[in-house]
Image 1: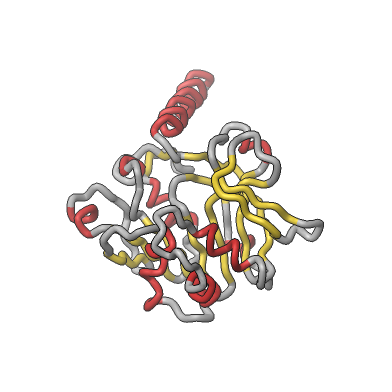
Image 2: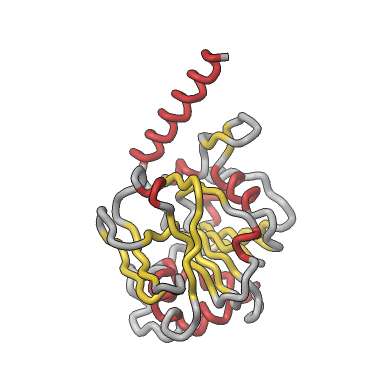
Length: 238
């Protein structure tokens, strides 16, 4: 299993240079450290980034043998960024593609199936505090995804993507992305590739729990406020 994280085009780099995320050891940690630990069941973790960002230490994480940094200049869109790892992954290897601007619970049991792929969605309880423009997925009675609508507005009519995608074979991503005619469009995202994949492959929905969105500075500040509030009150109650 391979995990792919693209940091190219990130709009607020403080997500990756500040220890603000509270972990189970009651310490503040970097978001990338948390992600690497959460996906520790992956054999290889690819982080796609501009070289100067690493050199200038604006991105910090505990490096492990399984983590490979793929340096790249900024690309036209998210699809081109993800394809930077193509030479490192075999056609039939499993892949997870992650938008690293959130935190949630997930484990290897979520991937123990024979599906062609998955799109993970936010549960209804967490969605109430994570509204905003998000990709919406429509599923049938078998929980199979039949339609994807990019950047829909709240309130949402259907399930909302958590920005995490899984494919049983990497070649699905390379083959279907190559069929996109306007591949240089700056608005293209992973969801555009999956919109094509769902027409030929069986892609299903899977829910994540305890989803927290960090897509803008306002939501990061809200997280910090409530984290400190609950920590302080817990200590006072002790």
